[in-house]
Amino acid sequence: MNALTTDERQMAAVIVAALNLEHIQADTVDPSMPLFGQTTPGWGLDSIDALEIVLAIQQKYGVELKADDASVTRAFASLRALTQLVAERRAAA
Image (cartoon, rainbow, N blue to C red; front, side, top):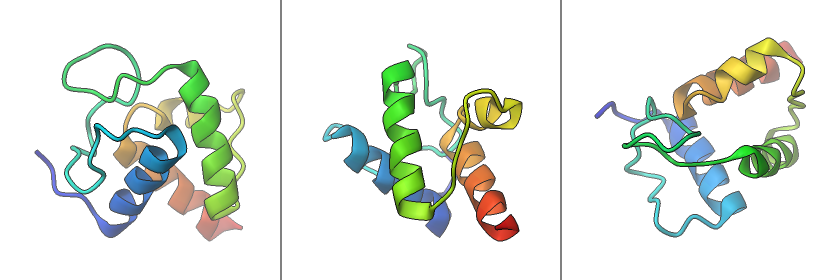
């Protein structure tokens, strides 16, 4: 398992809180694990969860993520990729 960075740990906490995922501990997830789909190991999230995550990110970080943006679609592959995209968008703002 890969170690979480501080930003990844914070993003995991945002996702866990936004989706009420009591069965997932934000401090111990693998940041490269897939967020969506039924692969194991993985978060097992779906498209409705993605909408909730987008809203939570916008509220917490002030970053808008649009569904028609290919980089956003790629970023939702894992916690690590999503955290990196949000950090890049925050730095560019």
